Image 1 (cartoon, rainbow, N blue to C red):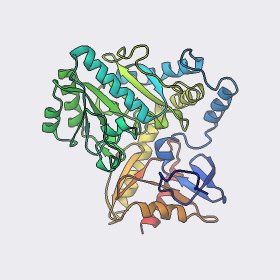
Image 2: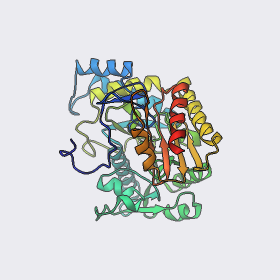
Image 3: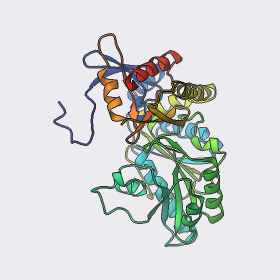
Length: 392
């Protein structure tokens, strides 16, 4: 059945046919509780009625228009997205298709800003060990994990990696003679759900401001309410120069965004950057539903639900659970066993009348929890009870 795809994924043995809320149903009719949201994408769950209606209504009007022109839906989405990100100082947005593409845009902004303000030779982008910024050649170049680099060099020149939390290494790396930007995830997702320390982010913001180096926040996975604030950077009380978003931004429809604050808002000019599908009306219509939903008390509920999951994991006092960390509905649990067999058992446990559990890994020994924001307390308890049995 899988013979037509390239061998790029280690797939679990299940094929899905439909979903509703936080539940997925496979082609055999078995049901699964979704604690992964398609890796933080389906933030409002599956077949969320307002999202379904918005997509259908937009598809009946206008699927696509090239960027020689504008669509009314994309204009409305851009305005509302900038407003949602205004507390972090964002002023303008470029719409793209994915997180990798958004991060490419952020890197281009940093390099052009530095060239315009300071001349050539100041183009290095500094990122962290354990980071993940995408799978294109340049976003891989920014990714500080050797496992993703294997077989794909040579890479784009001008990137350097430093250990997270090391203030001395940070000070040294942010050399204003050669550095254009510091690219950082508020919470590193792919390396195990590792939040950055507040002191570290505060010092990074200070150094970047003092040295006129752009601070680039990659919020592809941790943004759009995932951590309990619309942007994860809000929890640190800082205003980055650039923020990138994707994954949950349109609730399951491909979209990416690069937002820039005052310093960088006007750096990109005509023909500097582009994206054929960027600003697609269907993606914009879906994004409007997310923006109208993920705000105010809804964000507080994300925070509360995440605290509930973390408390349950800790209260079990299971010797196989070594550490629990995260923020909002972005949680990691280090376990003594390898994580992948837990994922396999979560799928295989589905049978007639018995639901399976879809959970993610992040690194070899970390379980990753990214459930839809709409998950209920009862569904959290059901999923956690399944997990408790899987862990043994």
